[in-house]
Image (cartoon, rainbow, N blue to C red; front, top):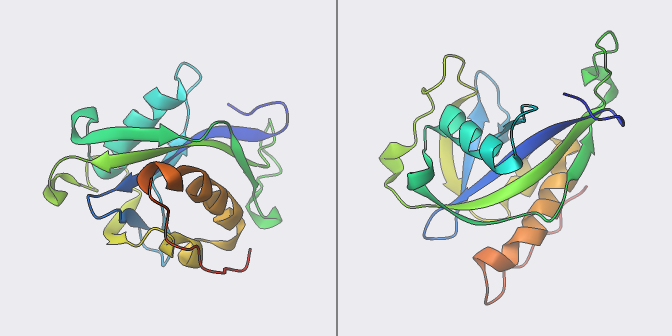
Length: 168
């Protein structure tokens, strides 16, 4: 499902613990870390897609988390030229995402990366709130910054830690 502008609808999941750290996952067989995310099906709302992706990618069910909030609208990123499949129709030039901020309510042992027939991640860890901006692949960095900036007040009502300077 690609919109008329070439963007694939997608959801991003920022999962926090009680220490306001975030779940950071490594893609299988790569030195590439990211938040869980995934495409929406045509019959899903963003929230439905988020809960499906949460179960598929990290093994958590709705009762394992509390939804704290979501971005107000779509955040978009374009794929670098080398990742655009020019032969695909319709042409996908990037992703548009609704980002969700969740709090884990269960123990860390409930996080399971092997709940899917095709796991996306082989490792995960808790990181400080702004850490992902330093480590995510460069073409996603602006979307991550926008999502984290928008959602920070929900996790840090007294004021978020200062965002480090990161090249975007």
